[in-house]
Image: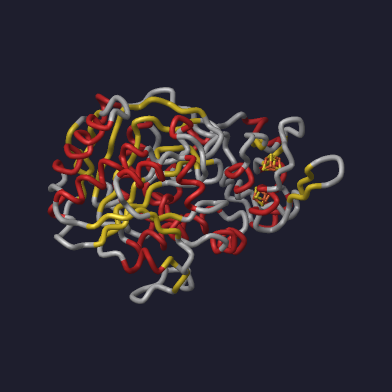
Length: 380
Ligand code: SF4
Ligand code: SF4
């Protein structure tokens, strides 16, 4: 079947306008009744990476989740919200992100992912031992609700990347550790998770997205768009079109297309890409260039070829969230300063993701600085 993605304008988070925008976007791809039957338990998987207020654009906006709860109930579905934040409990994160108050108001339950199991049908294509949360596997329908943001390691976090949250808590760090600084292998994990879960519907919150130093410390950018699709991969490709970058720039797209997963021909419904293209969107500083060098040489030149995390010691409050999350324990809280062990560092940028003070940023390797290239220009 031909893959389709709908694009709808929605200028702000007024709940009625968002509800209207969601309805339009879903109607364009067949209507909610084509995804949900009466009595279905429907998991809503927002991006609840970290507990920050909705205006910071770190998490999926409560108005999107609220609208979906209403739409699902209209056809007799039973919605609930689930996720596994990078750090801290789901309840605390959801409180800060405005999701908890909305969920209480709507009498919709919040379920923390903390029951890792191997999928009962099929594991990952490459990574066979990927454990997904049981709640996800037991849901009759999964609706993926990503936020449109930049991502220091993977360039962007959209539909496919959002599902990484379905791997419970600390298991995420293990997978980071397993693939080390191999971004392509990490993209493969993301693709495997996507193929195991196969959400029925993906709706991208692109009303206010994040540009720059994402996924936690970038700047909000008003884009005024909602995208919807049955296929997260198609949706991610159209998001690249809207940013004016090659679809293969996003590594998850590239890995998928190389394996014949996903399509080049995607039908766009609603607004035309040319009419709503987002100009001057700031991508994150390039974290790595695929120079095509032999692995031993890439390893030897790691510091020159890749970006690395650095800390603004003045801003740092010594909360230790970064040291806790760091998969290889390459970061330590020492008497005078926070200190990185760059030989151990796998450039996953989880530390940057969780720092509540925005004290961690990315310093490009000297070769990267020299050539002054940004990911936007690379198309890798
Ligand atoms: S998370 Fe940020 S504020 Fe906390 S110790 Fe690390 S750098 Fe400092
Ligand atoms: S120091 Fe930061 S970027 Fe390096 S491995 Fe640890 S969490 Fe990842």
